[in-house]
Length: 474
Image 1 (tube, rainbow, N blue to C red):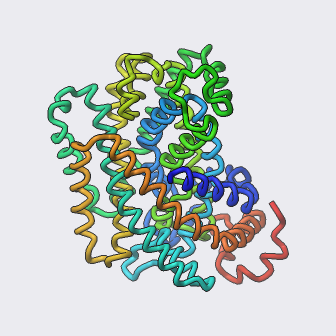
Image 2: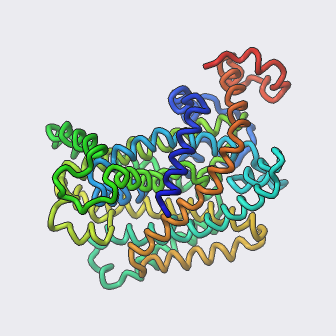
Image 3: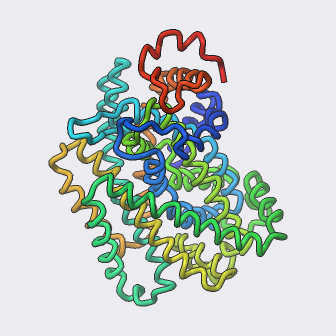
């Protein structure tokens, strides 16, 4: 069943990349300028800044998917899985762009200044606009149910169980008392989650750059220490992508190249969530002048997440050979990816597992608080704002359960839910992609005419008048 969803995501990502004329490369520099605040306009409507929205969404994506997920991919599919993760990362940039632009386009600003947005809004309202109201309603409800499930699983319990796997290696006490860890996570989570998106964004904005920095720095140190081994590792990634198993060392991966492709895409999507529609919820709360602006910021996400962080993790694992070391066989068998990465780093920098334990804890924690926000928005959409507290309590129950359930069960459930979200989301985004294409054309025209510079008032007035005929093709 999963390969079908994987094919669907791959098709979506390819379609969007062609449809948006490779916006993932065209507007890459502009995206960096936006995050730096070069185009920030005081008084734009929104609850959080570009940087905070990117941090919140990144804190949901840069996390154990990069540390644990990559290790799981390589231990099952060999180094070649990395190649497909990078490809899907690059294509996923456009999927992320398209869904986050729609998230902004169809968001609702409440009278109290709260912003409601995300896939459920563009699925229901966007499809209603193009005459597909019944379909939109069905897709939005399906999306919400899957997102709530994913927030309990992949965004929560999976984070607890994988981070516990790493932290046990440093704090042996948790081996006998895993529930204590669950309790700590539950209490800390409760404090932040009860505070809502602004407190989540504030926490994320501080944690994410720090932990990404520490993690990337450590990866770079190991890569420099083993500089000579990098070309061989890269060769393994390329050859493994097209000829997974020349010597039959791995357990036969079903269908060879297809097997590796599926594993790579599955982990990449689990890691960067492109096409899943979750990040559109965080990005819809950002302050913008034009919906496309946030889509452009969002396309950096799969790049940072998959192309940079995942590739570094992969190189460290391949160079150290942790995925094929006999002493790690049990870790590989139980799919405890976080622990495998810890072993790979530890074999090079003896004290690094302690630092990784801290990073993993922060990764897990920040992912949880972001996903709690995603799940809660979906819950509120289905059952009304008054019921948010019920969701928060349920979420914290799952946080605790994560410390006492096994990793494999949670991984399967989480994959099913997170990949499942792509079914209604990609279908809706495909149907609405024409609107995004038009908006993108208008936006690049405005960019070329200098209308997006701060203090320019032409935004929002007669934007359709003549935008089509004078906007040159980028």
